[in-house]
Amino acid sequence: MLTLIPALAEFFVVVAVALAAVLLKTIDARGFLASAAVGFAAIYGGGVSWFITVAVFFILGVAFTLYKYGYKRKLGGAQGKGGARNWPHILANGGVASLVAAWNFFHPSPWNAVLFLGAVSAAAADTGATELGLLSREEPRLITAPSRKVPPGTSGGVTRLGSLGALLASLIIGVTALPLGVLGYPFAVIPACVLGGVAGAVADSLLGAAVQRRGYCVACLKPTEALSHCGEKTRPTSGTPYIENNVVNVAATVVGALVAAAILLVQLSI
Ligand SMILES: [Zn+2]
Image 1: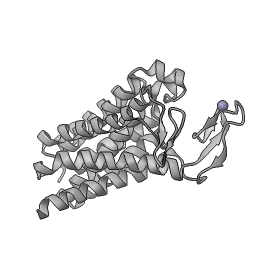
Image 2 (image 1 turned 135 degrees about the vertical axis):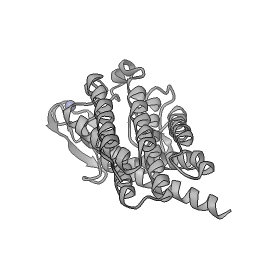
Image 3 (image 1 turned 45 degrees about the vertical axis):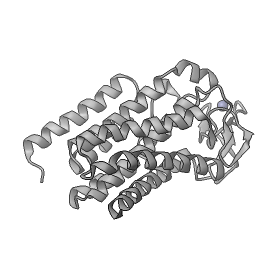
Image 4 (image 1 turned 120 degrees about the horizontal axis):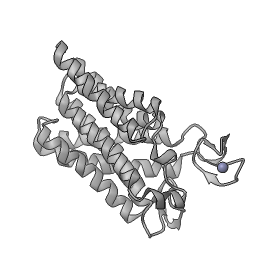
């Protein structure tokens, strides 16, 4: 149960971290509210250890995005607005983990902890894969048709550097969560995070290649996966109209959560 003084202290920690992100111009006002919501769910639902895990993911995302940002911007694959993430992107990556944390507030269980770790690892892996993959000198190949080369930043395009980014990011989440005791079964933490994270990134690429909406900008005629470009709504050319990047991200975090839980299940039964 919540007691007033620690609850207030935790409230100010969450607000301070989200505010720091605003001052670094990595999120805007709505992004602040979305990040604070994710932070509150983690700290009240799971405790300080869950909050630190999500905060490390958040900082990792900012670091990966800003790393060689100018170069990625020139390629045209960089996140817009100085790398600032908008609120739908934050909720798409942190939503599943937040719901699990909220559920854990009422029904604490190690299963919630492993689902949470899998969801956070998948979101981290996707960010690592996207941001490091953009720096690859190797041309991305479509995960569903490896003989086909696609431009950097295309959903479903994979590179070796991007895959390494996914592995590295999910390993960092595991190495953070292990000493914090997020999950009561320490032997399962690293395998659940790494395999859950990588499975989430693979799911993200598969869905990105197979079903994600693609289109072009009606103003500058550039192909894009975004819903709007140059201030205009983009016109769809292929894929499923309602399945855009954020929908794919949510699905990938669900896959990450379920794979992580499966890893714990297997480890407990051997
Ligand atoms: Zn345009």
